[in-house]
Length: 412
Ligand SMILES: *Cc1c(COP(=O)(O)O)cnc(C)c1O
Image 1 (cartoon, rainbow, N blue to C red):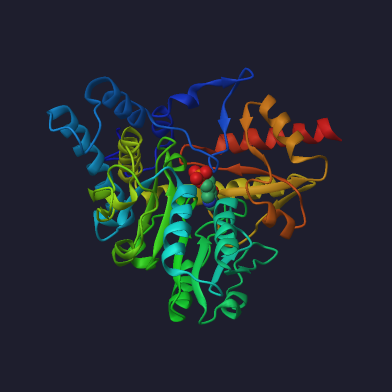
Image 2: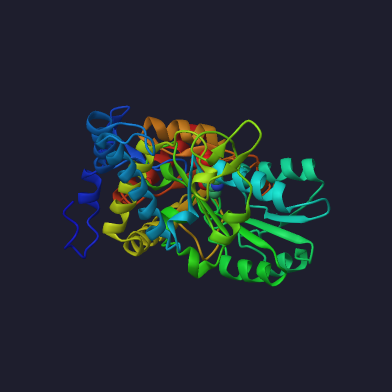
């Protein structure tokens, strides 16, 4: 990368690092605007994983031969990179999982079985991804918990006063998105956390979207758990992170049983390893974890604050231009937003919008976006979504606007 000594945000140089972006789709240059579903990978990540597979591949934490030691070192190094990236206190607070979904299920299953009982209350919000709804419903049904839902406004803002009313001394856990994958709203998580702590509840943040768009500091936030997936922050699929405060991970029971997570096994009794090994039953996705470490290096070198500033600018440009398109309505108009724009159009269904845009080489998401209850709340069944990444540029927004005009022409 040539960005080290370049204070200016050089989007063209960043784009050259992402091989996929040079492709054509339907004869048109690819305009990839579905980053909130999964982001593309820079060659640095691809090369690092290829290098492990070609030259250094051996299972971690097992062999005493140098091949395995190299892999183990790279794997543990990736854990350190995650720790630094989110400013956790210790590596033992970083649990590698398959993705945010598994991270949330881990907390629901482990913290839930160890510390929640009938009548205890869990609060989520109206704007949650299904991954941060269903595990809590399953736990509710299993344990007899009460699941409460904090509302959002028509603009997509978190209604903090309404949330306050839901908090009681029976509230044990609050599980909330840091940033909504549909509305783009960045929730007032510091206040949410403080108010939860005031009644003695723990807080899990679903950081899938926020982690790619803003700097995240778990210590400053004082959250108890933070979950995210690698694949949305330019790393591969199959790897994700659960951050948990050390004192919590220490007392939580294991999530799954198997190799790696035990201290001593006999047929009568097994004693468990300490965190993070306790939560890492089985061979970990270490090649993917190494890829994640490189992806975090990549965005860190550019600077998460620079990426955030660049994307903010891109977001306001895209919002202004899309608002000029007649018959288009943006869903989620909070003043505190990350670069996600969901919308509907008078002229047709989001699926048709996405199909016509695809003909123009433009990739957007359409459907319920894994957030059906939120769509119901907003009075719609589906939406289309433009989500911008660090490599998108203003001219691609211009292409999108041309595409949307074509959509109108086709569908009316
Ligand atoms: C993508 C996403 C998830 C689920 O992530 P997986 O990688 O599918 O596990 C959860 N919450 C939000 C807000 C997301 O955007």
